[in-house]
Length: 483
Image 1 (cartoon, rainbow, N blue to C red):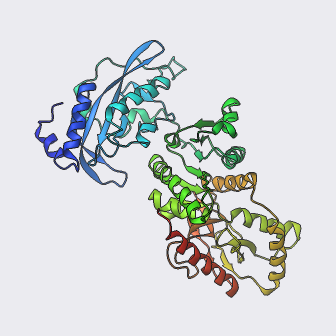
Image 2 (cartoon, rainbow, N blue to C red; image 1 turned 180 degrees about the horizontal axis):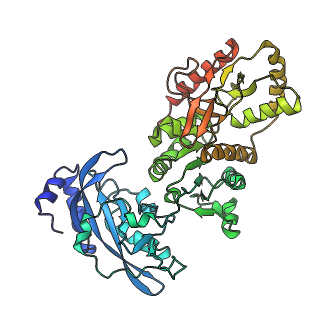
Image 3 (tube, one colour; image 1 turned 45 degrees about the vertical axis):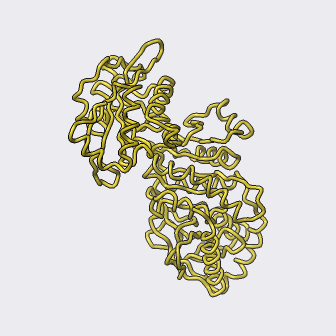
């Protein structure tokens, strides 16, 4: 591979592992000599730019007895080869991208090999081999239909040779590709975890009718023991079952239900097992869907939501937990329907930590109104009512179906941009005198960007003390974890 050009030598000189990167590039040349190095400017999601090396070339793909050349672009970050390339398709004007579990609408490629990248065990040659295998199963490009063609799924007869002028193509989707996609954004939701809770969430979200596509990711080795295998046998409209996290690409909401159980007696050790599991999940989910809202349903939910926020790098408004939403909805139902009582202009809530330390509160205005609800201790006359309702609430467990219905309600509020208020786990720092980074359930107005605003918090002395103690306890516990 010719790396003697001044621009290439200058750019490689800025790479953190220059010699190792050059060695990897020479290996690529020996196995895939058609890939050529070029220098170009890469624009990151935060609009910052950097001159990077890229490889352009074609990979041979066989489909239905015919051979095709797929044009591919690999951006090599300055920490290459210890970080994976950013992989993109390079469709010609006569091609259009077929969005699938390995390719998004921009032509960005997501593969298990990229997710599990670990140099030197992982290499560009190995990546290209997996790319060929995956694209032979599900071709990522097809011809643009002509006026008399109704089936755009026919595989494009790719050009045998791509001209060198391809080097000037930028990484964004060609303008001609944009018009083949629907104007309305696709409401895609991903549920991670194939256990009873994951399946309950999927079915509940599907029943709400607000999704265009829902992906259930189950990467456990024993998925046949749960409902995942049955979902694959009895296929449902809009549902895709996948085994790798790349299938979550471009989701609007990602629901995480995964839990890793440990035989350790220490609660810290049990939670640390979950934290370690998240380390292999959350960063990848954030990369695949950088604009998504992460909704955490794993237990203990307040702690795991904090962990997900730290590991994802997303703003706190877009990382929330199911928290006390189910308890709040139940409490409201018990007060209004079972006890046949309603304090004028008020609504009961459950806030704080999802544990025995959770506390009841009342809002001075109903949710989803133009005025921001202010949470108060409520008049003295409501305390007997609250105590009776709380006693009834204690007898209600948190079964998978119940949590799934709660998750679906939260997801619907986000997708529909309802601005409905839910008691979800959110970063509570600065609210009600809470100090430090800690996640607690607070009534939050939810929209497409996650938490739009949090209700004002004014509690009675007893409830306030409970909330502060919960915050201190959670903060001390999190300090014991290796996040």
